[in-house]
Length: 426
RNA sequence: GGGAGGAUGGCCGAGCGGACGAAGGCGACGGUCUUGAAAACCGUUGGUCCGGGCGACCGGGCCCGUGGGUUCGAAUCCCACUCCUCCCGCCA
Image (cartoon, rainbow, N blue to C red; front, side, top):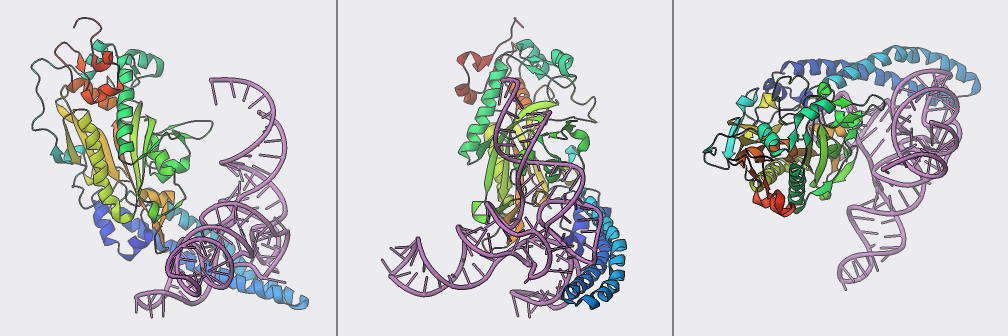
């Protein structure tokens, strides 16, 4: 949620910033709705003030004066009855407009509207690794190793659902534990949040009203299935006031994530690159406004630390302004090299949502001088299980189809599972 | 599934038609005392919207879960809804 007062005072920066999302025109719509609300507010407030003065006088008046005074205030009450609905309507319109307006992209987010426009920041390797045999993609590796069953997943639940079975399940737990251990070391409080959430939590994090089509909803109880732990982690402090001295607050949340993936028909079919359900360890941070940009770099650093333990070649990209999610002012993606696809694909992402979510969630910081303001929130992926498994399978595959699990994870695995081996000879 | 309570400021909690933005307590902040701290005592301490001023501020509106209603006037009365807690039943 943007601050309408700031827009009113100086709309130009908002126009410029929203133009990068191709939404410069909403600034004028917002100003118009705000103007209507303010002029109605002024009229209604004056009438109410008059009514209040009259009521006080009536309370003090003698019995015989009373009736005359009550009659006199009648026109004021009547005017209010017609104007109040108009004001309510004007307020609702402004609120709806604000709710569907995304955050301002930060100047350091590059121009552009698609993932092609993202700007590479760095890589952790010189060149993508080469193989002296023909690489298999993760789906055929999964089948060969007997650890991935998409056919039965489809039979049980439909396309984009998978069964994981055998040692890859232990590998998943190892990945989760690895991510969580690193987060605890970095000062995050581990959390297992609810994954079914109320509408307010979805609204507060900015997924509603705009991303409704991507959300699963339960029919009977009007709860939404969270597409990321970001939602319940952000909502943890919904409506709260947090002392400046308690910031930053950092949570590491483990949850299953549910995504409808509407409109992606035909994209990334097969395997488990894009599935409706996957597990993830997510970072979430609450900070003061002035320290969120440092925190953003810090979260990215934690993501890279996790990535290094997995020995996956990756690059960091700065996502284009027009390609950002609605809440984000800036987003870094870590893209892992997938040898079978011959390109980098998103494994994690890390956003600074500045005060956008905090204003919606009404999570504020009490400054040391006693003042209140929305704080800043950030989120980032520590490990998204499905895609990380893919990157491990593809990057650590051997000529015979076996996969050597990164050594750092061995501590979490029985020796047998340090190497995943084909069930039959390749 | 059945039943009973409840929702008030940063927190706890009183108030059940005009004197209530709201007692009291806790917390926080400032002060007295003290070598320092604690204790004690004194004082200060809500949010939000609109307008005015460069500004410490000033004027007004709204806010006692949400929405409606009654009334000249509602935290208080009426209706609907939401949420929370407890008890019984069932169940992991």
